[in-house]
Image (tube, rainbow, N blue to C red):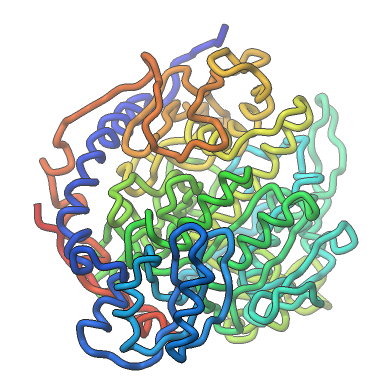
Length: 601
């Protein structure tokens, strides 16, 4: 039987429960205001391509064409006969990438074998422009804030596919422990690792860096006796996890959606060979269509159905850079994928104490555009995080003010300080690696992606100052997530209790006893109570997160119009609105600028 004690701010859970329940109302509101209006009724073109067609734009367009089952080859043949060029096949999605003339968009729209046509949108790394010069010099501050100072797990034998800008190897990475590199900016084949931007190296080492050049000796108590131990100040969360680097971003941190699709398909097809357990996607593009038709979202859902856990950044569109106003509905694709673990950024104020935690201003808030889903799922430390800097990368060489020395003054500064939801996603991926290892340590059947997501939400620590559309279920709780994962027996029959021992629903961090959220946000419904303590159909591998399932008596349904009682919370500061972002309509690599709009009730 579980033991319960009074803990700080249990009312936070009530606020999360009440406010999240009403977020279900966002779905019809968002869809009504912007779904049908985004493209012409019955059009198969996304809103970027529909706009180009309406304006008579005849310039070449890179597009992703999704066909009816079994008809992809026939559609591709017709594209070629019109003189357009097929670039890449996406077999698992029944789709292909092509460069077509603008005047041929309507031919694709009219083709009965075509289900949808999407711009091959530019994806960019989700690193913010946080130029603060402060960072913590404390030992293991990151792991301390996650409650992981004394964990016995280190991610050993867990494989993480990092789809990003590449990897520059160093003594901080395992190297000889089977880290792999494949370049999808060229032909997708194995190559010598490199990272000409530097974002991928930072993300990879936040997950699995050893912090070799930041090691110091400290005195700690062991059974009451002081002993010397070596501590790496800037180690990743799971320093023994294996990194499989799939490069899709170029030297400027940009790339095409089609490259990401290739990398995800490669990860699925080679999951067993490369022993891939998790995919980290610290990148994204603006939302141009419903997640039901978005190729990147569909690829993420495909990976989850294949049993791979997918962690995605929420995006860095949480604040208007000119006015400083907080904006909502800025979640990027693929962070809007229902089954992805979508992570926003938490600013810990460089302390392990959770009292001063806030959701970072740049972190994208929900709801997800078109679908109205409550996103992000959780938030995690993402501001001013220190990890390995790629000496050959643009970030390292153009931002000397962000370089951080290790412990050897005679060496070039080894580390780099970055902020963003990219970093938050990486930290979460590291915790997921620990969860997988902890569960494998005790059980033979693996945790499903849905079970991992439920554990992260259930054990999350609510942020007192944030609403559900900013924080999801709350802040990442490494200690709680790992302990709960260790206790769950995924081999237990559906409908039965699957904890193999007692568990207390709180975590002690920096001397404070913190209550878990004890809620799971299932789409727009809050599930609470003992739902995660039982093996349920919802935690199955083939169930899409948020779809209708039978919960029994553990679901609380609500119809309160709380969000619209105070529309100033989010409705007048929507990031996407009816406008597009300045991404050159996805046809060229370049910077993005946010265009803000309003939602009318």
